[in-house]
Length: 426
Image (cartoon, rainbow, N blue to C red):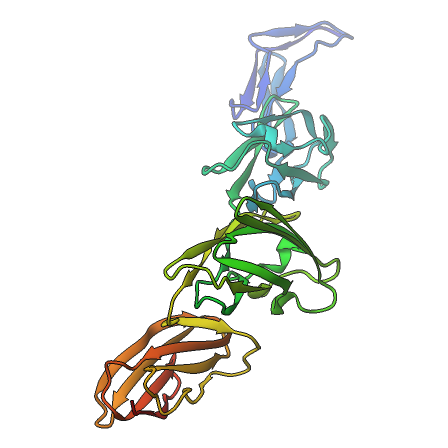
């Protein structure tokens, strides 16, 4: 029936996250109420407890229990970096990760921003500008990559920043490292022949090509000096011999330089294997001077629809020799590696003999030695010389050898030497 007086209100413990605004003596009139404001401001997740104890005046002791739970969203990225790895220049890539709210309150993203030196190379248009994830919800975040500038040595990088409704941020890194095209060797052979000789030049693919390069077409051109040699025929080589490959070729001429243009195409099979692309049949002019030479120069070469490989073109040289004392390629296909009997044998007054041999595998190291009857080496026409698959012939000048019996030893890589007898009788 009368007023109620409380001398003090005590918060226990008197620390955040609870606080009260009551201080000093409070008198409450009869049949009325005065509010006591209690604030709860948690700075971390979890349960909190406290008490308000009222004492003095008309109150002996009165206790009010306080309970509160701090909740918050927690952004969790499956990975902190989307790494696109190494990509060939011009190639595109896609990567994604998962953003999950592992907290107990809504995760509200109020803004998404892409920044960094190479931000133009990354596309995040598939990520919404704003979104909300309820507790336990997740969302896939994806980015696409394609370079907008030429090959660079340093990694390309950018950052996606997600701004939350409390102005805190979550960041996701983006990274890609450029990979330059693989140098792929395309080479002609070096040949030696006599005036009037037929020679069989070859354009060879010396570097394997990954299937992922997807090579279904290549084209190019090569030129040579017509005062040294004439073109007879251009055919498909062994590596493109199957019926799905088609060859078209044409020629043009400017003064003494003839240029052959060619195109190889296959809509079904991709080119991957090393070997002969073109067989080029030529004849050395009968009027070609001894010691004369012509380069078989690749004036152009192109792989179509790829950024993984780049051609490294190498010229061949055709040299005119009176005795053809070095090796030159013969017609036909080699199925194994072996040496044949020299011809002529015995070697007569002309002092010259030819030794033919087949090479069954590319990049075979061949050594050819001539030994006298005691086993002493008297000549070494070939010394660890690399040959690709094919049939070859080497001409030997025996003018420095005395009459008698000799042996020639043919060594191919680590195979057992092959030995044949040769007779010199002038």
